[in-house]
Image (cartoon, rainbow, N blue to C red; front, side, top):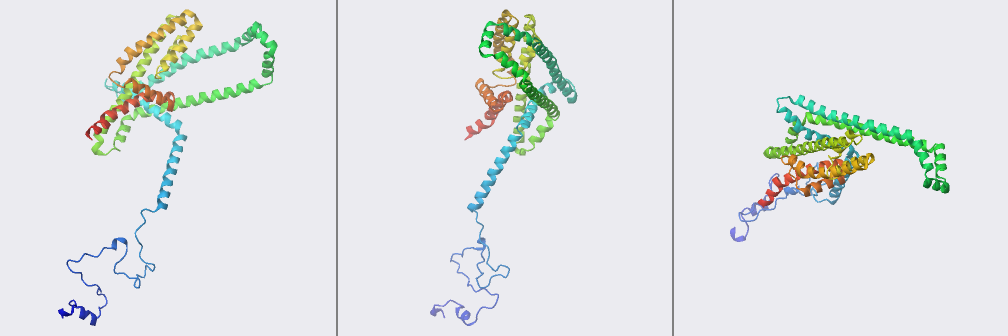
Length: 404
């Protein structure tokens, strides 16, 4: 049988067909390559077109199309739409987000004062009450110092308005211009026609809406600041729990250092502004400049604004000094020039040496970028955020680059 070239069993299989249930394939020799496994493609190698399963009359499904261009385009379009909706939502809630950020910033800034009182064996609740009560007292004093002078000046201007008009009529230049263009007659017609009353009423409504919005925003900031100040520790712990456990210790150390730097910056800025306000009040009182308390508080508040705040306060105070007398105005200009040098080169380094260490270039860039994005609020937030970014770069980015 071996001489005929047939394999063993081939004659038997040709005489006796295979029984039902037996495989019609012959076993492969030991050295032959294995047949490719097509079961992963979803195709049964033993199934033929003439004996398909009854539950799949149209055949077995093939592999899923992983590179389907339609699905890729659809998922990409949904991602773009989601990003656009998210940007629109953030833009719509921009004012609320700014109030929340400012409140959290103030809470972090007031936290060092609370912790200082806690170190004197006071409970955190009592320390928060004292610090927050001091903030409310400052706003009350600011209102009492600013509102009465403004009211008095406005009332005096309204009372003296007829005298100002009479002086204008008696002035030779104004009289000649009025004779040529009839300006006073047009003003009288405008006032009598009701246009001035309409514009004044609209202007008053606009001013009232601005004042009400400012009061509401201020009240919201105070409430949110109190809430954040009371639950600052729990907020930090909750935020740290979102970090993987293997990295939580390092993130906690970096986060606490960033919070300490922000708090130190806010506290130091408040101390510098307080010093500026007290020194300004003493000087203006000595020079007999009117509304010394209101001007001193204004200088203290504007001194919080980086780069330009001190200049704004000095210009306003010096302008009031010039209205009082020329000597007082010149003295105010000299005083503010000298004080700014003392503040920049002696007071600020002493206050910030242990809290925030930011290069001058980073300070200017942070204030300019923050002011361009969010105005005065951005300028206030820019410097501590620049300090936080420098800390992260020094502790995280640069060591990783050195290891590569």
